[in-house]
Length: 267
Image (cartoon, rainbow, N blue to C red; front, side, top):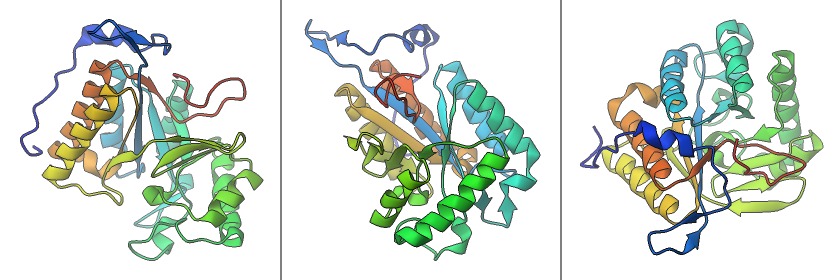
């Protein structure tokens, strides 16, 4: 259990509001206010973590919250997505059901420890990695035009290379950038694991920060590394952060790009 943060019990009766219009809501004072948005993402998805991710996504399904699935062709422990047909099948089905597939690097284990794979790459190196990752996902039927780097940090060279390979949206630590329209929605990732801390005090901070952003009608971006989902503290923190955002009428959505609408339209 993470430190002394009260549980927020999910109330089924609130689920019917999750697909409501994003045009606005009325506050207690009677003044119109803008509803916030909620984006939940999971990284590190593979054979060893799939059961935990499945269970977590089931909890999100019960809340009618779609999930952005951050996928990398290769993970630590010599894992290769193209050798894992069960995970590929599961990802395919989840996307068909409304979740988003987001490219999340190519070969993170090959990079230096404590440094994100795309954090310091020059444009030429970024091109090679993006090309390799894109080919793998295309071969598996999981090609995506959305990108979020491991650790959520990208170099200027990566930002330059992404549109050259057809990517239309970049989610990084501090915002969500439309690479076609050259606009950015500023919002910080609240993460547990994969570059973020996992201690009880940090989990509590994630929950409190999510509530504060939701109360102000902002974009609540909560992210968790899959291997943290088997731990009661991080899992409960994610569920509480989601429930608080929903309680404040945040509209659940995923990372997405659409040519006809704003990039953060509700899914």
